Length: 297
Ligand SMILES: C[S@@+](CC[C@H](N)C(=O)[O-])C[C@H]1O[C@@H](n2cnc3c(N)ncnc32)[C@H](O)[C@@H]1O
Image 1 (cartoon, rainbow, N blue to C red):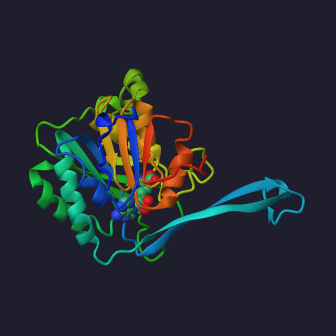
Image 2 (image 1 turned 90 degrees about the vertical axis):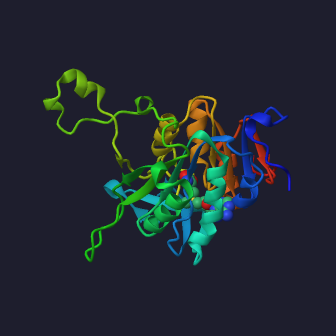
Image 3 (image 1 turned 30 degrees about the vertical axis):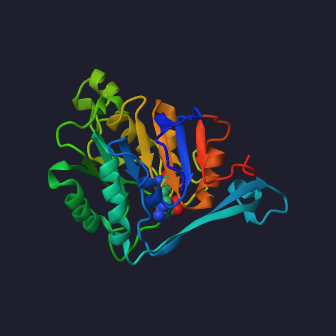
């Protein structure tokens, strides 16, 4: 297989790289301590097929749905993207990839590991073993509010993001770079502070990617850009190399493009690469490895 050159070494002038491949084979080709920040959002092992059908709704007198004010609408399906989220050997699958992640991280580097309540406890123990407990910095709880509410238990409406650093003191972290949030009681802090807002804590409230919003790519489990923006801005510097080897729709890449970071993305699902090709259309600073762009433009 081609050696996956880290972005700065590339001869073709591309600043960013996207691979269609199993991530373990790509990780094994990367140099030690060559990446500044890693964000990964592996399949959560929900034991379901993750699928999303994109639809288009138009006004039509003969439409099959009635909307606001009794108007008729027609809904057409634009296609379904999906991937299998079931692994009986989930930790065995993750372990070699997390060991590689630790190896390729620079001394000042950080790993954000995105998971949910079903697997987080097992993953925390595995990551403690690989990084060391002294390198565990935070468990971020991302809370959202979407969908139905169970009447048989408290509806789970959060994900967990574990933050580990390669070195317990030398890591990059600058929360002053990130968006600030409103005070709950702005009247108690004075107008100037209320206007500035406050630094986020380890509990983040952020909506999921809205179904009809412009950010929506149609890829199932796409994460909001606001979450990735915070992570990239706080834990890397302009020009740094950020890797996401469960890239999906490429949200990490989108956050890097906004903020002058370089990215290396990997996904083994051709559908994810097609979505990324559309998301990053028109950019000539991305090198595509193992994926033929012809037919996606
Ligand atoms: C939860 S999704 C990531 C979503 C992404 N964070 C986003 O915002 O769109 C997980 C992704 O991991 C990919 N994946 C699963 N196993 C993989 C492997 N061994 N190598 C590369 N990608 C893999 C799946 O195809 C899927 O796109």
